[in-house]
Length: 261
Image (cartoon, rainbow, N blue to C red; front, side, top):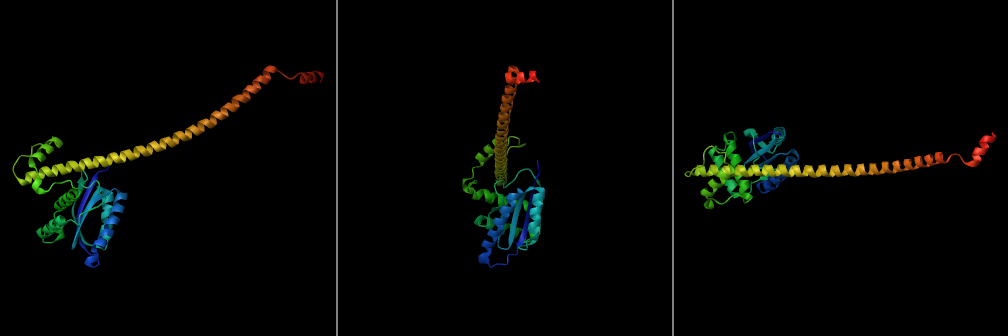
């Protein structure tokens, strides 16, 4: 099985268009990314806000690196900076060839906060924080997370214990950080289920293709069989006629002619 690879980067926005036309330009970037990534088996998410891009790429390492090389050559990106890269066990965006969360108000606020923390220095951005931000925003846009006031820590702990009985230590009551880690485990479990669903869909498609190919082969074999059956019948009929002629012997006029000679 091909090992998954994740790369998180940030870059400066060098789009040479007025601010009013920026959304249209980003939509073009997004459409091209979705088309190319789907063909390469790469998934991920994109954040665009004002002066910078942030993006997560996931998939087979060679395909991720090839995609990133194309981004580095794109003149719309400047100071392209890798923030995190390495193997990963599961995809965080299994159902998204490229999710776009740049329109989310919450995303704009979080992205601005991360920028201020780093002094708006791309090299000081936290790649893991960006991944978690994009992952959370995508889940929120899908309606898979609850608003903060409705967060039920006890329910989360119960679900974690069912989903991850292999955890070495139970998540205890107490700090917000622990509750957040519980939610992170749930999100990871959801991502794993999405990965399995994607694999099952692929396996089903392969089975359907194999079934169609097998059916075509069977139809071809049936036609060939019928052809040989007809040939065998004709040959059998000819042999029967010859055998009957031998059994009857030569015709009387032929026999007399033979004796006269």
